[in-house]
Length: 315
Image (cartoon, rainbow, N blue to C red; front, side):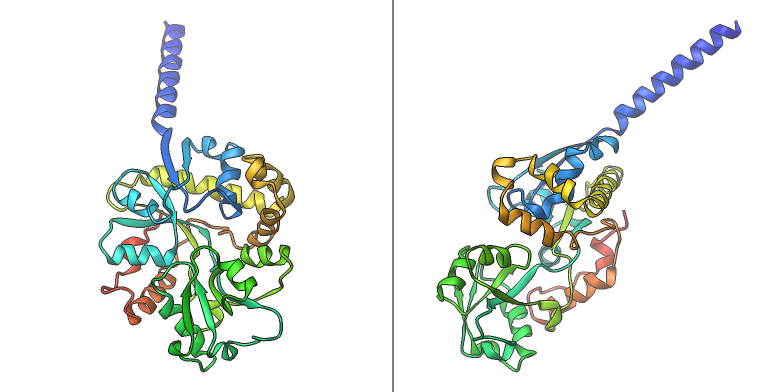
């Protein structure tokens, strides 16, 4: 009788464990902001090393056909998570999209105001009367204008030229004197590989509040807190691995898609991105978000001022 009881108890325990494993396996779809590149290192490493599986997450990674769509698809419940930019999240929330920040991927700005390092432009003040190339028209007056003011230059003192995605080539060819939107981990290296030395002015050093370059967003109404916490644990573990073993992690990263990832530009970008990854992806800094939102509001980029506590939950 005692043996039968033990057998039944063991069977019940096994059944419960099996049920729990199934219940804890979460299917998540993540849409990137762009094609896979070193900015996505922790995601790829977590996927390749099985960290998502360890946390009970079955992650499907998608690349966007249109880089402007990922947050909108999250808001429409078409995907679970998307990568976007902190400023863009604030704009979307102010416009009424049901989004929350779920975690941080890259915890510092990457954007720069970049010039050639040829002795012609050595400080912000030297940009007076110059042409500045941008990739996408939108909020450049707030950021570029703020940076220019630190050098005593008015926004009207420069000419803004939309060069599309040809930022580096436009600067190298002399079509423009500076570019806004060149990333400090990519365009600097791309220009160097083409034989051009560059100089970058960082927005956070010239009047613009610091912000998180890349973040994960989820639907504010339907997000799965348990699944996101598990996702974040995997990302944190992958980031720790990358920081501790950068070269081994690089080899594992390029193995994900060797034909497109294994090149000199990406390896240089990888090395320059290592210190930018968020070591604590789940960590929350409400003031950081509020400060940037107030900056955007004061420059009339957003018409309403959302409070970080409403869209940056602790997960």
